[in-house]
Amino acid sequence: MSRDEVADRLTLVVSRLSRRIRPVGDELSHGLLSALSSVRVAGPIRPSDLARLEHVAAPTMTRIVADLENRGLVERDADPLDGRSFLLRVSEPGLTALTAAGSARRERVRAMLAEQPDEQLALILAALPALEAAATSAVSA
Image (cartoon, rainbow, N blue to C red):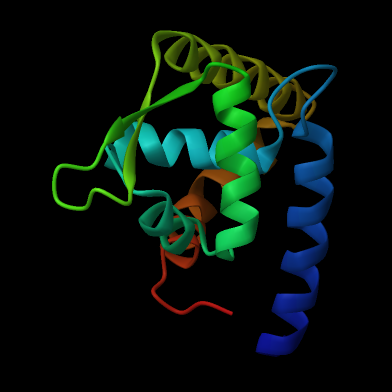
């Protein structure tokens, strides 16, 4: 199988998996959850740095930050190095939201995996290191 064929199949599989674990009801969207997780890991962080980390344009990050702030999931502090900017940090409700979202999505993945026979589960487990390496590759679109 060629790399192009692998890319086509992987794209389809990732899209289908993503749809099956997507947010339900008022759960945080993938974009909000990703940004909030990044703030937790890298914070306190400037919105411009968060935009680079999340690979989104500044106007997109402005909307994400506004949404996170409106929900009370992040708080801003003055940037001691740049009076024109601010730093984001995750609030207590933000930490609670991260825990809840992670639990809900893990449960949906568990349900998908429960449908698989042990042989398929072993193949998924064997593929995880390669998928993790691909997901953290420095190459970006």
